[in-house]
Length: 455
Ligand SMILES: Cc1cc2nc3c(=O)[nH]c(=O)nc-3n(C[C@H](O)[C@H](O)[C@H](O)COP(=O)(O)OP(=O)(O)OC[C@H]3O[C@@H](n4cnc5c(N)ncnc54)[C@H](O)[C@@H]3O)c2cc1C
Image (cartoon, rainbow, N blue to C red; front, side, top):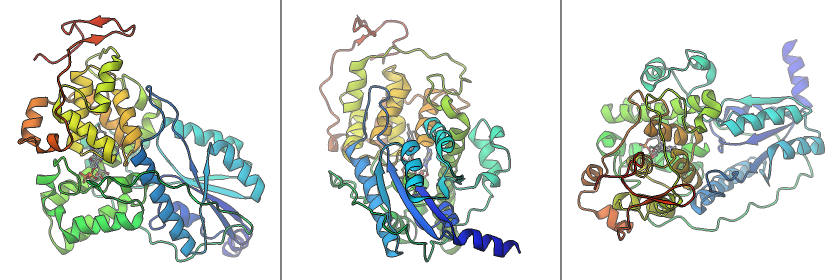
């Protein structure tokens, strides 16, 4: 009886699925949940980030990568007789209008962490005249799999890892068919990308390129087998997996990567390196759930507020501009920043070095650095970005209360012959050491609280 009722119910349903950070067909529980509608309108809404920390817009490489993910998703949908409606604006306004226009009866999307995203979803729920179903987000595990309530998420990574590392996360197959879009729906073309990938990082967006990279890193070149030794390499594609651009957009799911690691372990080799790669996926997972739980605290200067030290800083626009452009007195940091600007990517080691410089050497507000990364990273992910910045600033989930890199030691260890620094033009003329206060009044470098290097 229940089956025949639900069949009748589904048979008349016209639904809308709003893609967000799940730009893929395979392993997409949200999309699958709407695959039994009679007609399905698939939508992506491009949202320009709001100005924050003196920054606006997004970097060209990040924009390019996102458009490529979307283009491929659209092609995949077209092969199934579907299409993707690309719109620009505010979902709270656009989605209710679409619901009205197409007489949609149910809307679905996936959950995205972030304070703004959460509030946006609440507002949307209030404005929609039909039910809004929010499916699992861009994470490894579903919320109901976690062996604790979200409110009881461990305050640090290690107990979280112990609690979840044995959970199972199997990817779902791609749908073999989808309901058609409402008849007469028009799908204008996507805007073109304005740049090509930088020659030193020739990565394209879309699930196919993501799968190729996953294949190359595991069974192909088997970089996974030495990952623990090579992961600190500053260049992409030769040390760490460089899977983050696809993971962040959802073109690849974390479950697919976890599955590939497990398959490699079963069929080829299980060692410290394969385990370490899985560990990094768990870090990503931890920051995902932290971001959902922490809400606005992820963007506050004092972060989670459990730091032992109270931090102070002056905002020196000149120091921030120099750091952004890669024109500081730290050649390796300059090279890293220039790599980010040109390619949209920086290694994990590079991000730690550069973030530590902004926070601990230049004495700036960590959120400005995080906002700059947000603008440019082709793998920008709210939880991983702001969570890692908080960690280094000592206002997040680090039990040691912050991480300060010794800049000279890091350069000697990770770029001993200066090849990377030279490649990205990091050797810049030194500039006078002074800072200014908020009213542009110069302060001597020895002023207490300025925390400038003692060189
Ligand atoms: C200041 C700072 C900002 C960061 N911002 C982001 C961000 O916006 N988006 C993002 O995806 N990662 C971010 N990271 C984490 C990490 O630097 C990148 O995930 C990693 O460099 C991506 O390269 P990869 O794919 O080769 O990583 P690999 O070392 O091959 O790791 C595999 C995957 O594990 C995850 N991962 C690895 N390290 C971390 C980590 N420390 N925290 C969370 N997840 C991790 C990523 O999804 C990554 O793709 C940040 C780190 C720091 C220190």
